[in-house]
Length: 327
Image 1 (cartoon, one colour):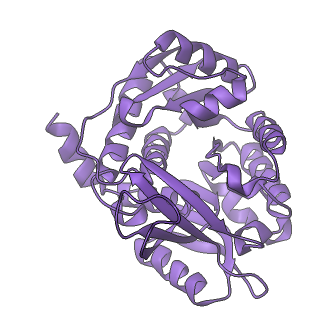
Image 2 (image 1 turned 90 degrees about the horizontal axis):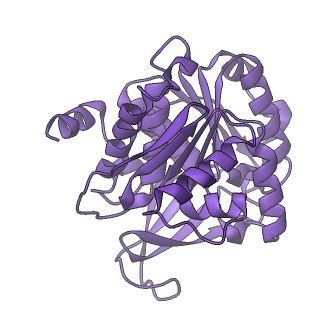
């Protein structure tokens, strides 16, 4: 297996219109989502094998989401069904095309009830890369299951990838969120954060995305916590990477954004797609290769911004190649 993702597979209730704040939206449109699931689908559309490990409710939405992943060619042998909890739902408002507000119906949600003994160990010990986010760290038993999955994949030589993807409303308090996020950083090889998460994890007040010196300082501080590669995504302003041998800013592709939800997940899929193309993923962690790899990932994210929804917007490898060839 090339890429395994673990975590939430849920229903995203997108607002019918962009503009209204939460509480003012008049109608919602259900779409399949969940950050790790988005990554699995995006990776598959780019042309590599992908699998998903997680838990949904034994309900209409749960079986619908499995059908979506199956139709995309994502391996679902690691998906479990919970007869006692509903499939998690995310209610989304979009004040503008670049920002989103989230309210999660997850008390409890099936996704955070994944147990260690339910993990598909064969998948975890045979994959080239494992990716997950912080939503599976908010509650037990999924928290312990995530740490165990990371351990199994890491010991088998896989690239372990972590997107902080901080959603304040899902945590009991900010201190617990920070503690869990920092603890997991020590367990992974690839850390992906946005500028706000980078500031949170480093204790900086705020990051100026136009100040490359600040980006370098934050990325180096995070690199010192254990990862081999730190990537800071900057939305429409591009991305920044840091490895032991140096770092650099990779400029964005300017597009007319329709919906930015899911762009970060698409970026991660593009990044992982390129990193696992070689026999040893560590061979790609060089100043010569990473700028081009992140340029590819930026392109995948940019194309995703051109359509509404997350999974429905993920581009194919042909679309990415055509986009890059035109630029």
